[in-house]
Image 1 (tube, rainbow, N blue to C red):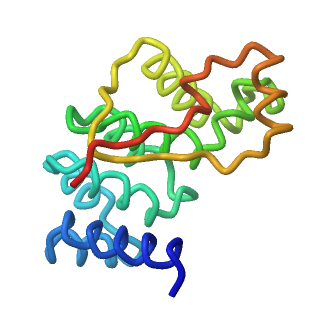
Image 2 (cartoon, one colour):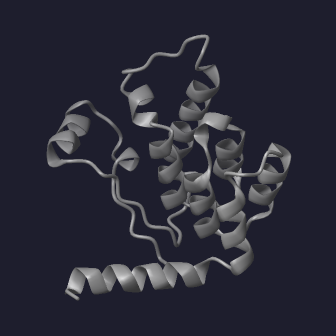
Length: 161
């Protein structure tokens, strides 16, 4: 096992410790849960940025933006989790006006505007969750040239274990 594999294995093990067994079951079951109110209630009551990030990643975003909005507005949503939401929503496409608001995507556009506003206004503190956007140097240059605020594409080193 090389150094990178060992680091990835260690990170996965530490991450597993940071999410309780109950939370892990909730993450595993989210794709099968039909009661959106129950899904939202779980997110509202969570105090774990790790759980919120993983819950958002496991969620079927085709089911609407009620859950991502609740996560974004949870007081325990940190910067890494918020950026995860932004990128999962493909918020950069909206920010760069590659996709315009229309009658079919109002909920998505509202979500993108809210998350960008919160990110730009430093609503989310740097917490335990890390985030690194999967972008090339060319894309990074494109964003810088377009005047995209760096908070939308910068790597976040969480203050985890």
